Image (cartoon, rainbow, N blue to C red; front, side, top):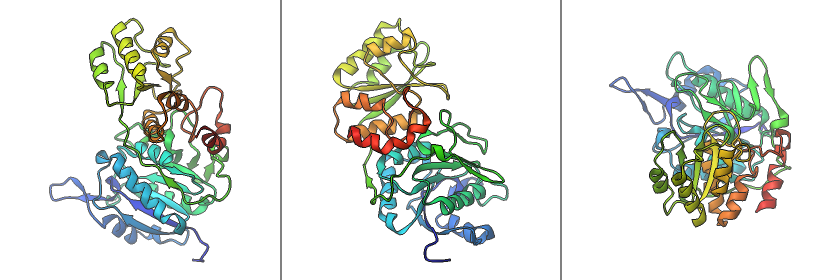
Length: 363
């Protein structure tokens, strides 16, 4: 392999993909086992596969145990290895992979190289699995397009998604993830098809990305449901909370005849709590201008999150509060596209390549 061939850094954090059966028959993480299986499978040694090095986290984590502190560990090891590698693969459990993908998209900036997350529903150790395809194809994509895919992505079941547009939609199928409001940027079948109009413009070579630590702010999420007790919402909105993702009905609707509910929202926003409306349905936009019930939320100080996912909205709240911005600025920026995470009404997917310049203008 020539000196200028792409070299890929694999950050193995844990998850189903590298587990093996334990004595009681269940799956458990095993240090070194993923690397051992990759060495034993001839496909990973093929000439078409780029050179890669595996860094294993200690301890290996079930992704259900992921916290912002673990996001920071992942971001910092990527930053440390940035100059030595052409692309980065984060091997991760599926349960919170969309949260981590969203967080990394805000934590790492600027990005002129690809960071791809993948994992599997069945371990690589099993004869029938989705692990080999996800892992091998991720490496091949990174090797082939390391100089053309800036940003954070998630690859699963032959689809390459923008990382901060994803959510887990199925616990039992190989098609575990979807990007409900943004088309996949790539599909892998007989041919590899990349929609380059959906890939952000890196703007030329960039320096080693800085890392923004997330998790120092207090943010939360609340799902509206019929018959909700306003006191439960009021408790959630109590200090020290700074931001809340409000998962609404339909296009950003909520019970506008529940005065106590609206009063709890208004009391919180008057104190400076930033409340962002997202939609409970997988597809669609939370736009508080559409219906009277949305207007009631707007009058209580809630802002539209448009087509952002809950995962990305939480990461974005963390990120904006980390900048030390006042609540009014956070509210304004939650409605702007900073990392390709949402599409405000005046924007189209073709404009997402302007992400970096737009973010610089808002800082």
